[in-house]
Image 1 (cartoon, one colour):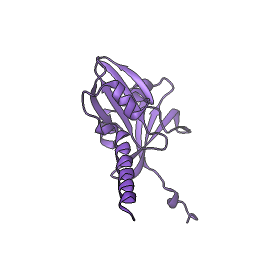
Image 2: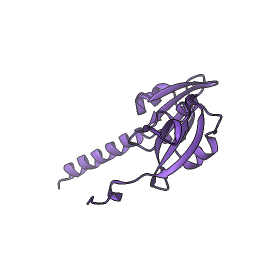
Image 3: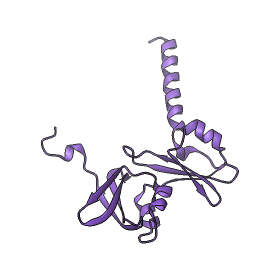
Image 4: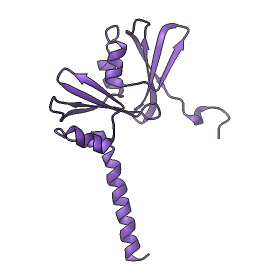
Length: 166
């Protein structure tokens, strides 16, 4: 391989690594202006007003396993980045019998799946997440009045868990 080809290949690898980092919300630093955030990450999947600013939400649902909330101050500068599809975050923050459907949307975004079961009257919003690299699901039970009534965690079955699949 010629030195030109090696240099070109090294340049391509560097560009792909840098462009991959540009899509990582957790690499943004506090104070980053909104315009720079949107330029790096693209348009948010949702946006919510906060008492002291704005939340830009970047969800990787339904196929992905993260939801990043980027909270901006009143001047539109990044104050905080938080990945909320984490079992500890969900256990500590989802307020059973107090949170509403709107709270779930504002904090966790749209679910990967909305289901119903015979044993609960209402919708079950399912979010995919990782717990120590194991695929899991969080099922948020929302009653017909829009109040969160239950939170259940299950393992997500992988395709190789099904019999007869090679």
